[in-house]
Length: 219
Image (cartoon, rainbow, N blue to C red; front, side):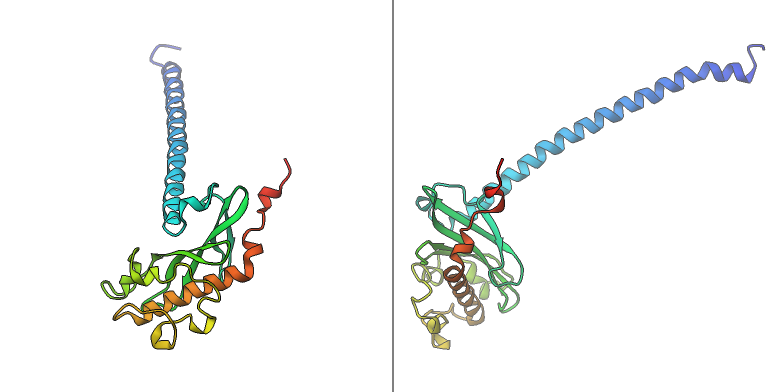
């Protein structure tokens, strides 16, 4: 067979092709490793950011001197009245229940649902209320989202029977809470949401602070 034979030319090209395939495979493995390492550290950073933000949100309705655990990690999913499980964060001091932060969805806002965080001490008294999400009219109903407003401050230290249930409403409805001027519907929704929070806490405290299944699992 002479040097110009096609079969001999094919034999000469096979080693180079094999090396190319091997090189591409090595590059692919390296890329996969780089992507995997980057994903691992990115995921860890994202998780840390979520943890930090959650704790910041909780701290707006839960004074730091109330607990010595990590309430953003001591969390259970419970139906607090929205029809679906939502986060409830538990605060403890020296291992004993100290407070809880309930996620409450008030469905009856002027435009749409209003999502609240309500901090409640172990004795049932409100520690703070924060609007976390709302789509109310900017500058009017949206004023419910102001963190340090007299409207929000009026809930602090209130409980299931203070005022009595029939007075847990805005004044225009015969209750004891002032509505934000021009935003009665939005105010009414928030008052109703906080009322549901204190009612839920009063009747479900054992469930709220019950040990999680993973905490009960034996090693």
